[in-house]
Every structure is written in C-alpha cells, then in structure tokens.
Length: 312
Image (cartoon, rainbow, N blue to C red; front, side):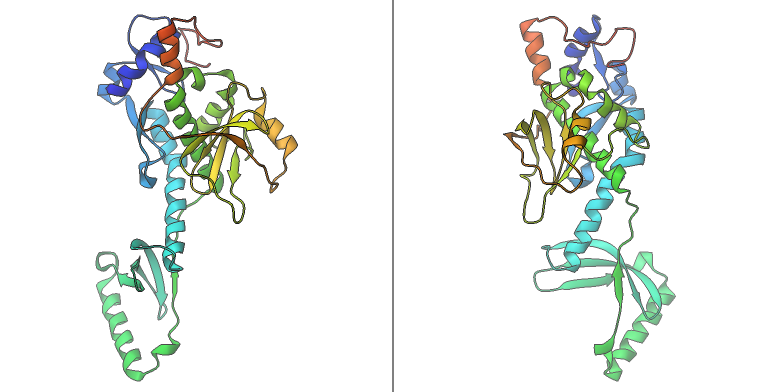
C-alpha cells in the first residue's frame, strides 16, 4: 500500500482525475487502491528476488505473471549455471547448488558444494531411487577395495532451461523498472520508452534486436548495481548488473536510439561510456514526478489520454 500511495498522486495528475490511481509502469493500465488489496496489483521484485532483487514497484498481475513465466526465470537459470561453474572450478567460497553426476552408467542428483579446502559432492537421498543409491554405494566400495579407484571417471553437469535472448529482455525489464523507480512515470511513459515497454510486453517479438545489451570485455568490468547517466558517445542511460548492462533512452537521447546504436557499432565492437553513476534505488523514489507535483507544473508532453492506458 505504501508504494501505491507514494506513486498515486503523480498518476492522478497525469490522468487529470481526483481519485487515487496507480499506473502499471509496463502496460500503463490504471488501478484504484482496492486493486492493491485484491491482488490485481502485485509487488514486483527488481531484479528478480532469486538474484537479490527487492520489491520496488507494483505491476499488474498480468504483466508480473507473464514476465515471470516467459522471461524472468531465465535470469535465475543464468545465475544458477554461472554459480555451478564457479563451484566446480573452485572459484566460489562456501556456496552450493544442485547438479547431476553420471557414474557407473547411471545418473544421480547431487549437491555440489565448495568449502574452504575442497569441492564436495553429496547424493540427494530424496531425489534418487534408494535401490540405485544402494547399488552405487556397493560399486564404490568394491572399486575402493580393488585399489582401482584412481582410474574412476565421472561427469558432473547441470541442466537448465535458458534462452539467452529472453534473459536479456528480462534484464531490460529490470533496468527499465529500476530507472522508473528512480525517476517516475514522467520517464516510464516518455515517447522514447514506448518501444522498450512494447519489447518487454512482447518478448517473442524482435523489436530491438540486441542493441540494448552490453557485456564487459575480457579483463574489463562494470561497477555493479549502477544507473549511469551517459554523456558520451551520446546521451543515454546504462543500467549495470554483473558483467553486463542494458541501454535505455534518456530525455536527451536520439529519437531512435537503438537504430542509431546498430548503425554506429557492430556486434563485438568496443564502446567506451563516459557519465555519472548512481546507485540503484532501494525504494520507489519517483524523483521527477515529485518535482513536478511540488512545482505544480503543467502535464508533461505525451501525457496519456485519461480514457486510455498511459503511453498508448
């Protein structure tokens, strides 16, 4: 309810209505306060909670559930796979994850854990056939007693469903919501963000290609969890995650930012960004909305029609 009440005054002003209204920042549909109680509006973890996100904004049930089923879980799977690789390579500290081991011609579900001195592999009793486990133990004992265990070969793997493009769009969504939480509806429903919102709503459509996606080069890194107001090569916003970032328009960006990016920089080319970094918001600040309300300025350009969805 606190997020609803914090954001509603700006939405009501944009729609020129007296009732308290909250706009879903993705689809632009307006909701009254009872929707925050009924579940029509749901708390959105930004980025997904599985990788440390927190509830910053409300989104409508449709936008939240559709994104969760179609794109958000690819972020979790991506991080799970990276964590698994770090544990196997001994590059993590006191972390564990699930995986599968193939040995003696059979597969078992296991926990793989990196400790201070070793990488431990443990069978998950509840996830394996007890008869197979007993057979495995017997074979391991016989192999050890024969003194031939040094030649034992096994494979450890982790299988996840991961669509890289959908994962990138999920990060785009998180970046968009982070900036919206910082700046407000004035930003979210600016005309330059229309294509971003449409791409998030329709992940199967290829509206942006991958021009919004940036990865750190070998030996390079991004300062994590930042929103960077970029000045050079031209105005834009960069939202950084772990070794990757998404590009979003700002108010001074070229009108067709992503097309400009695709024309100037081909895939794999290096880009140097210069700008001012800011920490991710830890709550819905909506700074520009608050400023407009305090100054009692006129409605911003591209204000939605009160009878329609915001931004349509």
